[in-house]
Length: 328
Image 1: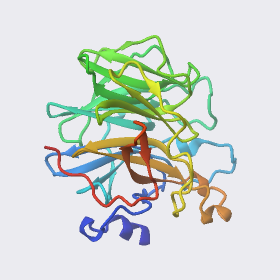
Image 2: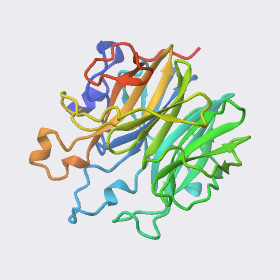
Image 3: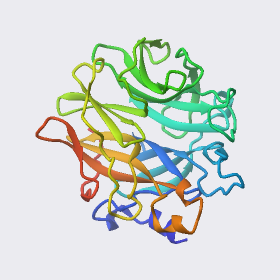
Image 4: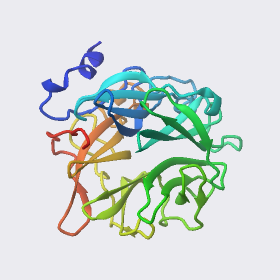
């Protein structure tokens, strides 16, 4: 009950983003967020992978708790205080039991969700039958979703779409190909339906959850490299230069934020870039007595800035006191 009260506290009562920013009140496994503006209800909607983190399995190697996942939804007026809003209304006809890593791209009043779908519930990683695909859905209200297309991307194990309107025209999508050493590749489309995969990977590192955005005169990519977040910079969103090191690779000092940052979304809003990331809870005090506490994940918030060296930086200890404004 205490958790529910925290989640439903009015935004006006909070002077800054709390740590954690958000916990899923059902499974306590919120991850892989995508945030979009709901112009009808005049609020922000967060879509996220809803891991079954409270599930206790007899076999410690069993990964079924990372499967059979719906897409959770939370809402906020300011991006600082979030309230649980159930699960997304996604049709089973074109998806399946296990849904991961939603990406939302909005244009001309239509919201496009690019969703990772895993065909079933698996108890081990990398089983031959455990493929993954990216499915395209559409909505005009961010509430009811309709099936559009299943993307053909040249692999039977692709996950984690990141989509922009390309500066050269058309659209561009980045994704992780698990058949190619988990490298990040990209594909182009003239219409968000037909995609042409490009042959080369983006950079020579394994990673997932690529998020691409334009900020302070450059295109940026942030991807989860499992050592922290890798950062790349580009002038054309095709050729990328790697930022030295990682961000969010050092644990924070505050409770619930004491591990690496993972799989983020970035919202560029009113000249600022807010980074929503998730953090595992295996380094918290509760993990000493609960052997599956490490399954839990929470959402945190930080603000990105461009440093004097021209690269992105973030201070996870710094409070975020100004939230998101309604888009113009």
